[in-house]
Image 1 (tube, rainbow, N blue to C red):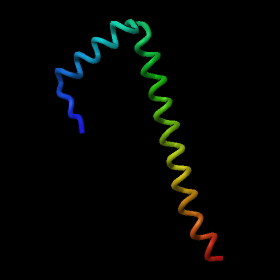
Image 2: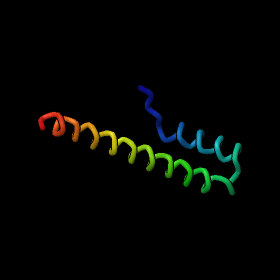
Image 3: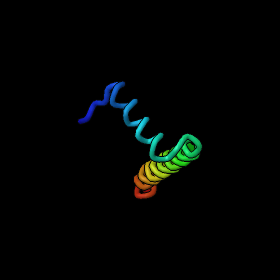
Length: 59
């Protein structure tokens, strides 16, 4: 797996800053945060559905 050091992360952040500009970074961060939240919510719902199925099969 890839392991990024602090130097690599700084370079990536600078490239993103140059591409999108400082004004758009908070908007992009919010969008990514919302996407991650929805993804985790979906995983939780799938997990809950999988846990309920064995209970329903025993009836």
